[in-house]
Length: 65
Image 1 (cartoon, rainbow, N blue to C red):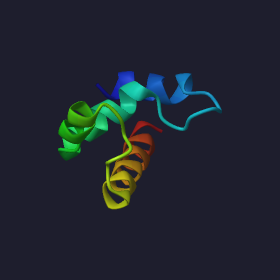
Image 2 (image 1 turned 90 degrees about the horizontal axis):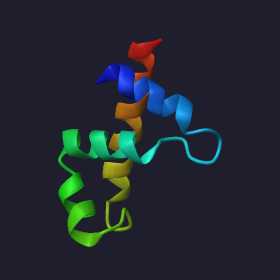
Image 3 (image 1 turned 135 degrees about the vertical axis):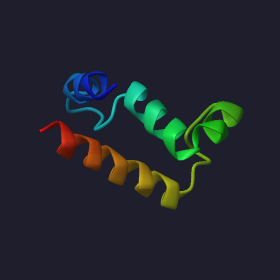
Image 4 (image 1 turned 90 degrees about the vertical axis):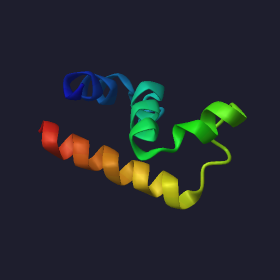
């Protein structure tokens, strides 16, 4: 899974920092994805949960270096 996540970081380019695949995987791991799935968007995910997702993405990136 880490190889796939590393590829997602590379593929995300400059437009978005995280690909949809990476966001989805992290959201599932942190138990946030049910909100996204229910609402159909990331808009109702709290800022605190988004911050946790960013922290997790940074942790994954640091492990893959």
